[in-house]
Length: 202
Image (tube, rainbow, N blue to C red):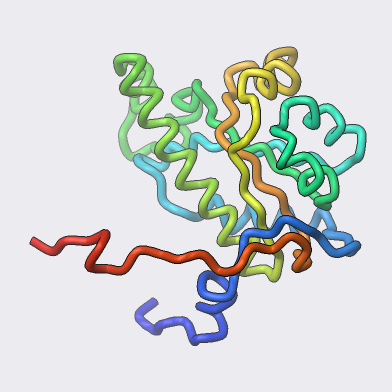
């Protein structure tokens, strides 16, 4: 683990990777999506709580259900993506804590007993981490991503989660389109803040 990745790997994960708005007409097999999740789940979360949940939309019919809840600027890029992924937060993630964190018996009850606002903050923070792990996992497997937050979360939750008891406590966080990206509608590389602008050492 002490050997740095080479420049080609760092380029693929970070420096040359782009947020894609267009997609090649190239299929992404389900096996590759599952492989991305298998990498994602290995990323660290607090007490291994793993509160992120992923709903993978592949068919035109599934994506059509999503379309009314998207901001107009996000419709074309999402409808044309091979996969649209709703990255969600399980607001009952504590139900699985006794399995995921057996080193501390009763961990589920401990999290369930948190004040609601603390529980929600904890769940969202760690689910967002997992969403970022998913994007890096996709990039590491040669896929491109286009994450979006321009949508109606309440509408998405009602459409996809509310009617299913197994998902009724999921809350949408962001959407990540996945496929092999094209340069269609690709923005120029935008500026980033320097270390001096955004960091301090104490």
